[in-house]
Image 1 (spheres, rainbow, N blue to C red):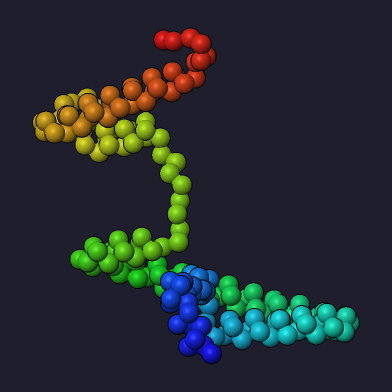
Image 2 (cartoon, rainbow, N blue to C red; image 1 turned 120 degrees about the vertical axis):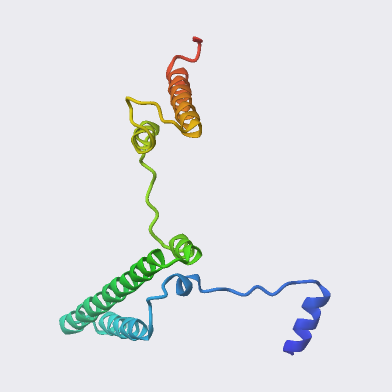
Length: 167
C-alpha cells in the first residue's frame, strides 16, 4: 500500500515534506537528563489534573522546580563551555575557528555606537588631535569620517524640518 502511494505521489510530482524538530537543533544543551526530568514533570502534572489534590500539586511543583533547575544548570554549563571554546580559539592562530564560533553564538547585541563615538575612538587611535599624522591614508580616512559625519548630520536636519520647507 505504501509503495503504491509513493508511486502515485511521484507520478503527480508531489514532494514529501520532512518535518524538522528545530528546537532540538537549537537546544544542544537539552540532553537525556533534561528529557527525563521533563517527562517526570509532565507525568506529575497529568496526575494532578486527574485527581486534583494538594499532594499531587505539591509533587508537581517540586518536579517542575527540579526540571527548571536542571535546565538552568545545563544552559550555564553549555554557555561556559562555548565561552571557553571561544577563548581557546581567540588565543590560537586559527582565526577561522574563532569567527565561526562567534558567528554561531546566540548572543546578538544591538549596535548602540553613534557615528561621533566611532569618530572619536578612531581619531584617538590613529592620530593625535593636535598634530597631523604622517600617513596620508590615515589623513584621508580622517577626512572621510568627518565628511560622513557632516553629511549624516545634514541629512538628519533635513528630515527633522517641516516637509513643506526646503533648506
